[in-house]
Image (tube, rainbow, N blue to C red; front, side, top):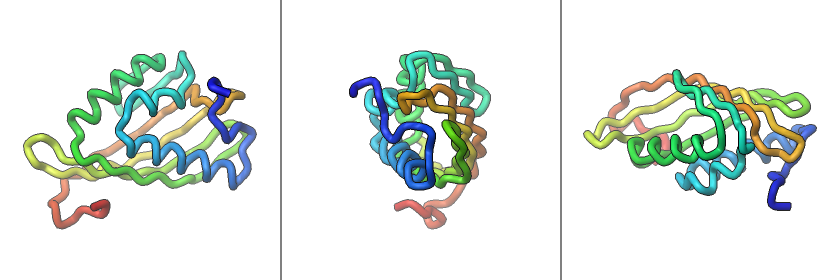
Length: 138
């Protein structure tokens, strides 16, 4: 079904791990049109200090993000889950247009609706400047 995004809640370990992997794969595509479809029309986000509401706003946010964060590569890890919620740890690397590499570390809290669409995403993220030789994700 077009309006569903399996696996659906309530999650078990296998389905929670699958959901995290699907999110990682989608974000690594760097395709805002694809990624935003995993969120409800009225999704609520906190990303660092930004508050974003709605799928279209997410699409715009992601488009701008990946225009600035070049060579983006992300890894996600499930830290916990219950019913329709998950806690995820992540790190990603990117390069800015001036050539500086960064590794971003963070945690996300996710809440899904009954169709497996993410209704809420709250992300805390810190960036660390790194040298090219320090990169993990080449």
